[in-house]
Length: 157
Image (cartoon, rainbow, N blue to C red):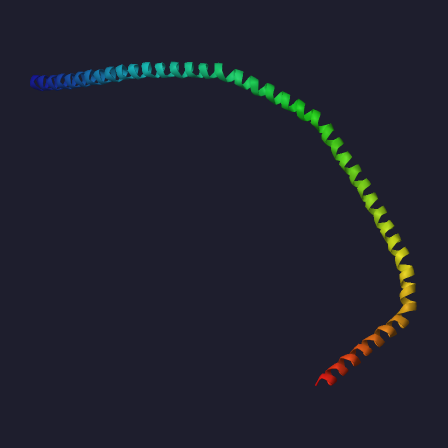
């Protein structure tokens, strides 16, 4: 039985040694991991500090620009508010002018119609009375001309 106890003790001792070796390896790996993590955290801290300083610089330069944009927008709003009544007044003036022009054109049209009617009435009277006489004279002159032309043709041949 003693031999079994010695063998069992040796197995326990080997298992303990194996456990200690694995624990040392794990602790060494953890030490390397934590050392690498520390380096990475320091790099991240540097990067974050750089980003913070960059954002601060951007803020320093951007705030005045944004203030200027706000002032410009305010001035433009004031200008457009001042222009609105003027533009509306121009529209009203143009509408009034167009109404006057339409009235003048209507008046001119009425005057034209009146003048045309005044001139056409006597001309129609003259035309009606002279159409028979003048038409007959024109036809007669045309016939005389045709006869003369026929005599010339016949006399020359």
